[in-house]
Amino acid sequence: GENVEQHPSTLSVQEGDSAVIKCTYSDSASNYFPWYKQELGKRPQLIIDIRSNVGEKKDQRIAVTLNKTAKHFSLHITETQPEDSAVYFCAATSDTGFQKLVFGTGTRLLVSP
Amino acid sequence: DADVTQTPRNRITKTGKRIMLECSQTKGHDRMYWYRQDPGLGLRLIYYSFDVKDINKGEISDGYSVSRQAQAKFSLSLESAIPNQTALYFCATSGSFGNQPQHFGDGTRLSIL
Image 1 (cartoon, one colour):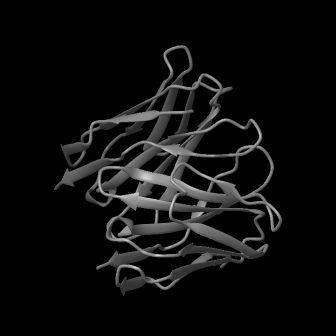
Image 2 (cartoon, rainbow over the protein chains, first blue to last red):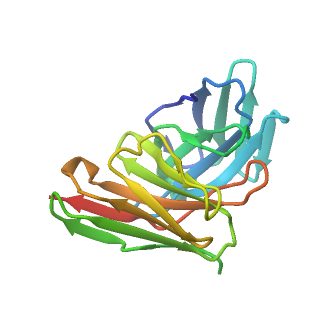
């Protein structure tokens, strides 16, 4: 089955810096890669996703890149702000039959003013 | 707003008790999921359901059972709770076609003494 590894487990940056979180996956059939943000005590919320037919997707300060050959994908946050502080989860799945997301173990991002 | 609602939000109980966590949704989604979240382990899939007549085991189904009472309702039961089932439990829903984003409820924090 699919296995997703996520690094780093914690990341501290200064406000205005960029942050990068990396994930690797094991199943070459995986073709959908969402990223979720979970603030303290809140539900995980989808912030961006990418499908395997594209290599990069951007939404304002957030971007995701995908390298299918190397089986890794990354989340990039530019011009970080204190409200970006949260735990971020990557996930992967294939559409063979049913969508079973396999999540990474999370990255705690702390943005200091 | 269409949403995913979990009850109760918090529950403290004793070893050996039977517990039911409930999830209802107004999104009109066919697919529903139960996840468990433990610190450092991310989100792990317990059970998932296509529709009312479909129930499938996830990664960590031992010790749990589910019931899909209607399209909008999906319940998780712990028949005889044990302390290592202490965790944060999330219900999620998604649309049916291809890979669709999963939408999470606010979670149930369960403590078993």
